[in-house]
Length: 277
Image (cartoon, rainbow, N blue to C red):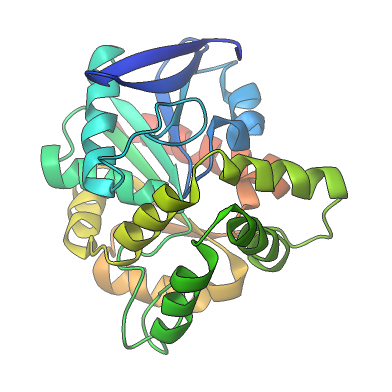
């Protein structure tokens, strides 16, 4: 088991794996669609020196229980609240990557900003799908998203194909070594395809524009977006969550590829937030 690894029971028969290391103000890290605590190893290594760092495998991800129910972001938001309560966390900085942002916005929908000191949303629109894809910040045109859902969530082979193409085309800007790509793919395949499909649909049909506005108006909020859609993302956030600070960095997995710069941005944000109190 990873250093600091433990399990939190969120309901009968369902446990959430967390890595809990370090001491100080708590930072909770939430990975994206089908990914695990392992993607944040560079943030865990860095921030555990100054903070208590908790990284979560969401339900049906990684080491957490694989269940036939609750594979949606409403339930993931509930699970997050139960983990925060079980670990006795107060004044938390929540950091979510990709669909992990949906878990955070769902937490806001259910609980407001209670117990949250600040938010960091990493590279996801609060409304991932729209018919107006040329103007809105979305994951892609409706027809492309529908095709991806119907083709790539059929079985493990298709899921592997999807993650491989997404990793090399969107997530990482440099050429990946074979072992790096295999590691990324293996992360995703820990979630079975039939569950990945549920999560894909739940995420794509989400609309958290109201919660994004509430979050940014209630506590310090930082949004970090990838370079490939930076201008569209900045315009969208200015319209829907204008109080959020926005930074641009790398590709979709910038916190891993450009970890030093990402950690610097997060450190600066946390320091500014602490100084402002």
